[in-house]
Image (tube, rainbow, N blue to C red; front, side):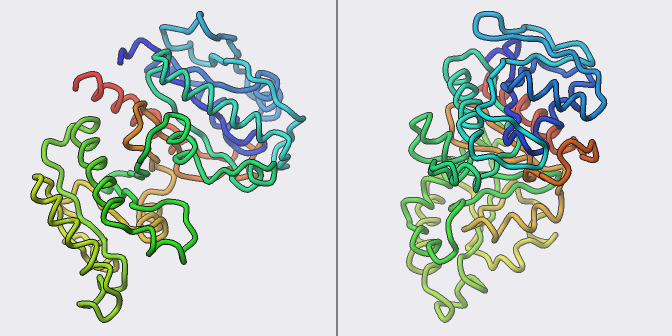
Length: 332
């Protein structure tokens, strides 16, 4: 990757705070060229609602910027809305617009036009109401890039948490914890910690699935029959793994002090801890993709859209992480 290529940001759900975040961020000059893939009309209307004077600079295929936009301006690849949009009011008619912005961003990264993509929050429910099966950015980008396995990881200062399973109903989680999945996810996590984050020998803590990591089989046998044998095979490959450990005590300073990442078995096992520690200053990273993708750690915040009462902290962290990962990929 060459860092002279622009990065792209997708503002996500048009009725949410994603457009606001992009405009508020544009008040300052960015470290890298940055293009918003969004509706020019939407950004103009939201800029007026926020009382911002942001110059929207049209760009597109063949005319990508090679330098950051001046403070107070934002490069935009115009992607028209499919229905009128008002802050805070969801409309399934704009689901195709949201997916089009993601598709343009990902395909541009795959084609080498962009160095990486940063995503603002989407609303999964309204996309599904539009008749599109959609469980999240992670799964969508994996399918679009024909990547058989990706890993969702959130990170904040002092803690990284990756997931073996992502957006599944809780009753389906245990069946999804297979040795094959666990080994694939762990190899991807280890490889990207080395190749994109520059950690020579990552130390990874692994959560058990059951309370007390199964209590020696009395509270479930997944640790004995699936997790521990898989970890032993991975240790034989030279991966530094510790566990399976009870999740209720793993997230304590004694364990985390010398840890580079935690591998949790499911979404709400690991992410509540990370968000308690760093909400608003955390980043969502998709590992295993052939492209760089980061995202904010929060939702669409429909009630705050158009008010200006939002914090751009997570988007800033997502941008900086994308820049670091792209530089790490180039160095590798």
